Length: 67
Image (cartoon, rainbow, N blue to C red):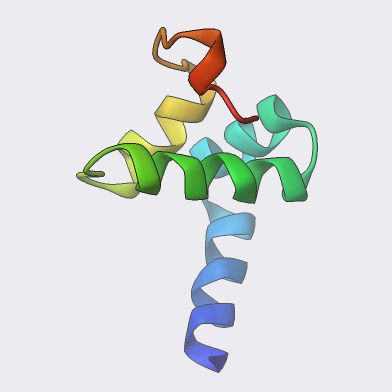
């Protein structure tokens, strides 16, 4: 659990893409919800793809968007 926390903290401090996704989501709670939703909906190839999907959401029907 400490390793997961460490990796999370490194992402928050060093990854500009993470910072941009967090800014776009407007709160950590919304960011984590959006990240979980992406894992539920599709195969994620990398963290870069994951964060870019927050910055540039795919066009999906409104009834599927749970953010």
